[in-house]
Length: 357
Image 1 (cartoon, rainbow, N blue to C red):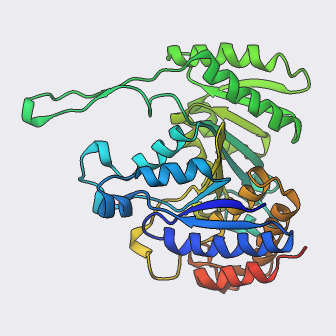
Image 2: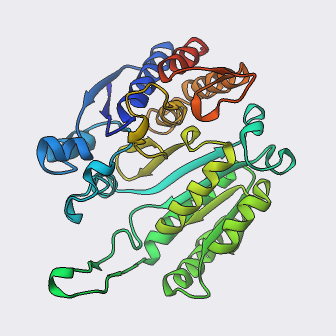
């Protein structure tokens, strides 16, 4: 049976990195006899230009009927001054909400070939393997808000954060189940000394984790967690936290691997999964063939693992990426003397050639 994957190239470097990841996804799928069909749709700035909205209904409908969505980055300076209701980033929030996606998984794994690229000393970073699980469907990003408006003399703005017990419980449950397959440790990150939502988060996390006696739950304030990610990243296994805190912490953790271009993500929940690199659209390098496609290629590996339920194919893609790095190939963001600098397309060729069944 054919499984449909919706392709959304997005903006900036999105077209280049998604094209690379699509090739790798197709190669791995063919090797493991997975029948995949593709359907391309618009979202983000490209959709604003063509349709007047960042998330056309046709894209939503196709995504809901698909097995998974592979997405490039959206947005850029071109669309910074559009009305807030149609900003390019609304496409991501809208897709997450329409597909019922409440958990964003962002793995940060430091392989030996990446140690030299990390800003941390080798003894601090070697062996770090973290899974950050960010709540996606609640919190301040989806709360009511009021914009400042110079035309009416309103010079204050506010954003409202709301979490329910159910929203917290379901992602903590997912974090505990993930930890069971890893090293059995979950750190729940909040700001319970200040925020009411964080006090609900902490209480609910404790109640939920009680059903997992084999998982060690601990708590950490977000500011301390940000510091400990730099001082002792190897101490973390699974981190679970709110939408806002997860957004910030996962971008910080991305730098541990030397480049934000390396890291994938999966958004999961009750509908088809959404897979995307965590980097932005990088319009300054778009079309130059220098963007790092590995974050998107590894997102395709997560698609194979979680949405197409083919762990061997996902393993093959991840192994091919590691081998390409071990063989000394780097895009411009990770290049250092003594290594081989390659373009976006060349890196895709190198990874593709190393996929083995």
